[in-house]
Image (cartoon, rainbow, N blue to C red):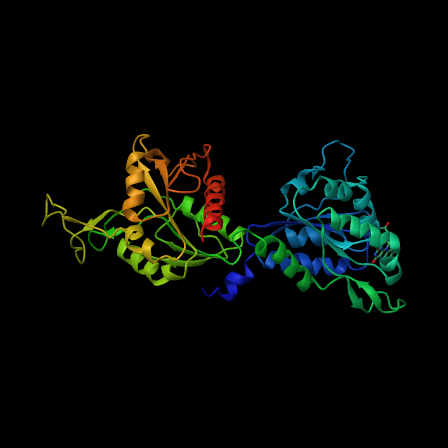
Length: 409
Ligand SMILES: Cc1cc2nc3c(=O)[nH]c(=O)nc-3n(C[C@H](O)[C@H](O)[C@H](O)COP(=O)(O)O)c2cc1C
């Protein structure tokens, strides 16, 4: 599947990157780094050591990110603008740039004597260090040992490069912070390429369909598209290339996915047919009208001409049933049923030839939370999710899709 340049640019959409800036000259490059991450769609926040603020004013980062910069742990009035654990717990990745010899040493020893070092100790997400220092500091055994300690504990390191130093009196050597573009590539690799759907092509249908009665009226349903969009966002976060075939929705499709906008069930079928044979995963989350008016009238049906019109309906194609067998990968559908009986959903899964079907109850439509039961003849059969937001459920569903993929030959 071709990923457009715009989509590629936005691969970090929705990912939260916390920059921990240390006090080295290279922090001027961190300004550009923050800008590049934002351009890639990431949410970026910054915390700075006291030394870092001597090189670049926090206002620069605050202006670029549009968010307050974390600076101090203690405040005279006791109410910090940025809480001491707020940022590390918010982040998907902490990027220490520049990572000074001092920050590397403190992190290796577990010292937590300011906002940045406390944040590094509290972070539970991946931490990427971009060291920057002069060659003598870089080559010092203390720095080498400290960095090795961090690596052993799972930290990631990008650079440094060999070349000219920022200070004109310094001899060229190893210790230059990697270029912002190279650091962004490493962030991408850590956040996206290492995701459990990296390199997988995922097609998701979402939203409702609209079946014309005449040129102004239509037959539709109340689906908001939230579940499909949450699945697309989650698949994107896990590194997948995502194509979202969607009808009208109450929410916007996420940036970074290929979108195919359709209206009717027939249009949706054609869009899915065009792509299904290249997919590793297909999730049918759209609420497709089961029926459509037999004939869509041109113009507007007039009350005077047809005081009691009878709408003749014909069945729409069953998109999942017609396309699932053409998907070389895993296919997952949704079964919206009244009542708690799982039997009709089991029958539906088998009839449509899907690998799994997610049973949910009618009152989920348009709601903010939902509960799903995974029905399959293999992995995860019969598991029911907790009642959760559609975003959380998307994670639950994709965990099971990934298990299924791993178990597939
Ligand atoms: C002009 C100047 C440039 C510096 N550049 C670096 C540097 O590139 N890397 C580094 O590790 N330390 C550098 N230092 C020393 C750090 O600022 C110093 O070790 C400081 O305590 C680091 O604090 P931090 O790790 O809390 O940011 C520099 C100091 C000065 C005055």
